[in-house]
Image (cartoon, rainbow, N blue to C red; front, side):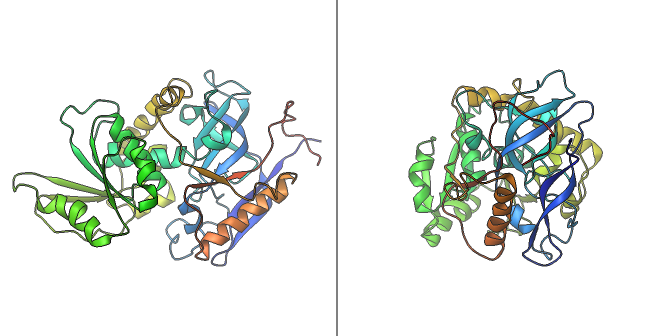
Length: 364
């Protein structure tokens, strides 16, 4: 019997609670889209923010599916460029739409998926897209830097929080494009960052030194005719020396979908349709299945993936899909209640890769 619904996770009506749903319709791809059977889903901090009713007030909806990062197999394609059976990774606007990664299936725009090359596993690929594109968005859209061109002047760029997933990928993008990277992160991230070309590292553990030698120093030491730009990934304004030539901006990667999503109400002034279209164009340039810049970099091993931990990997080795999705609920509530994960990225194994994909068939 054909399945019409799937398991998925949405936010509950109570603070800190996620709900495993079994009544979510399996989405149908339209022209230019693909249906993906999700194998792995990566966990990101905003997934837990969606369980905080005050923090997510601007975009909460009990039917929005949580999760943004995924890797999987294309099981239905309405695109000439992405074939059935393709191994892909992608990020989707989970937490702020009915398109989320914590589910059995998801529909993606074909131009926004990335082919996973043979030298990369699906489990690692699931840890990449959302953080990578958040970093790309911050650098290219937020700061106006050209990540697809070499900077011959070795322009210095400070990454505060370089040990986070976004900071790690931002550091790599900047290094590959010729910028001078100044990194502030926890001491445990030092060697990991040095391995991807970061030479200017200041430990966050010594906060006075980090501030004196990095962020505040960068601003105070600028000549009066110079301009400075700080772009943040959170709406809170950074505490730095205020200068007339200092510009501080905040934006969200979700503009790269090209769609006016509820979460974008957090960004003021609101983006115009032209802005969204331009940001989407940049995302497509880096995606485009096997034609985009990211696929080519992955194929050449130019981008290093942040270390991952598969959530409860041994305990769930012989579990079914329902048990694995229920374990994601546990991990989300774990973070929402203030607990911290180990260094690196958490990835959830949702389904096994089968030799024969019985797409949409019912049964155990």
